[in-house]
Image 1: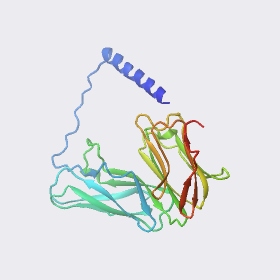
Image 2: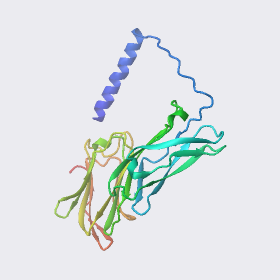
Image 3: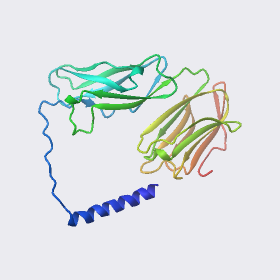
Image 4: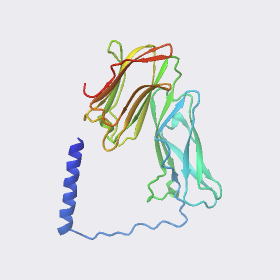
Length: 264
């Protein structure tokens, strides 16, 4: 798929070059002029796209900024997706001379635990500047970790750019699937998953459909951990798959010697 993408890109560039020689038409238009009083209120680009909170600690934050630290203003804020699961203030209050505000949010006690919840927030776009890369909209996936009295495993994936090629599964000693996931979206930056499993022997395997691991256009990383203990860490080009077989007993972790990376 990556080779096809590169080839198509070459054809598109060639078509643009050839077309520009004979069929150039000047279609200049004047962009609307922004009012000098516009304060460009928007969500900070560095706000997390994945929010993981515990069932007994439901608070989290997002940051809202403006370009002018002018007079005090009040900007309306609302949740436009899954509003029933979150406590969101009705306004963002900028004091005079302040250009950055941290907004306190929280999930409600009846919000689903152990599954991803999509949250979309929207600021009043009358205060926005549409020419900025930061927008008056914020989208995140919120995961509420339920209580776990067994072994809590954490899977963290940093994608290479092609999340649609990545899948994984966790199987027990009999080869039965306990959990599985993927494929993800192309362009998705990262993903986190949590599993609560009893003692026993398991095998975790991550797959790359293209066969070059997480290596294009940048190196990615897959890690599976039990607390601070690393079960698997696969970075960059690990081939078509990487796996780790391990046993958990009373909080102790033992890794099998036969863990491998590469084609199955």
